[in-house]
Amino acid sequence: MRFRTRLIITSATIVILPFILVVASYIFIQKTFASAPRIATYTIVAFLLILLATSMILTTWLKKGFFEPVKELNVAMQHIKDGNFDYMLPTDIGDKGEIGELYRNYEDMRLRLKESADEKVIREGQNKELISNISHDLKTPITAIKGYSQGLLEGVADTPERQMKYIRTIYNKANDMNNLINELTLYSSIDNNRIPYNFARIIVGDYFGDCIEEIGMELDSKDIKLNYANLTTPDTQIVADPEQLKRVVNNIVSNSVKYLGREDGTGCIDIRILDEVDSVRVEIEDNGKGIGADEIPNIFDRFYRTDASRNSKQGGSGIGLSIVKKIIEDHGGYIWATSHEGEGTCMHFVLRKYQEHHEKAETETVVEHDGFETM
Image (cartoon, rainbow, N blue to C red):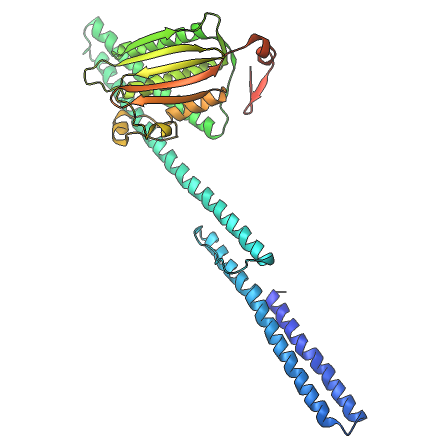
């Protein structure tokens, strides 16, 4: 039964039941006291008027205190149903009691739904941008691979030197495509907070020496100078995932390569490994165009671009540095950047050293990280 029906029945009962009792009393008085009919009549009329006034006052009070707030809430819920999360309930209704709690609960629900809807719109836009960026970036190496392959097939590269140049270009472009695909896969893992890590003890000098050798070959093919300095002791170790840490270095270097843009063509990247007592600090510095001071705090945000027009020409998914930050933080480290416009940018990240007497037991046991077993 609807509350309105219950209220009507209640209001009617307030009037009708006493009326029946009064009429019965009137008949009884007339039969018992024949000399006092006029007094009984006045008493009945006055009593009925009081009952009617009381009923109207109670009905109006319940209407304003319940029906109007519920009607307003029903309108608000209809807006929610239609996907309009900006509709707010009037603040002058339902400030107290159960209705007030209902209004506050509605407002909390509305704000959460609005936040979720806004996040969904932003995420959909970011995903579209990511797909667009990667689709654009995949077309470039594919076009180059097709062109150089056709050149080899048609004999355009008629000397061993030109053939080697064509093959090296094809190899580099294939690597670019592979990196983009890996980045997209890792982005999906980050979204689900499910990056697989395989932690192990790493000798810093040996590990970064191998990384530099591989990076150096790629930079050499692009006529970019690479300087490397390791200032740690030969026995310095860290606990890290070799593949993911390599991804960090490659992403930072790739980002530097995109924006070197030196007019004199003397692109240079310096990589330094520094000893900081309980930790190891890695610095990757370039002599590119640099980043504005107001933009540095945002460069690790997903899809942030310091120069949209330049970035669209250079390509890139826009998630490289956000992946770097996620991996470093999952390793228990931290990362930041320093830069001077027109001079270059330096990325710094710090990882804790492996301490034999504190961490031996930990590295020999299986540690669960974000749902994956790691060593």
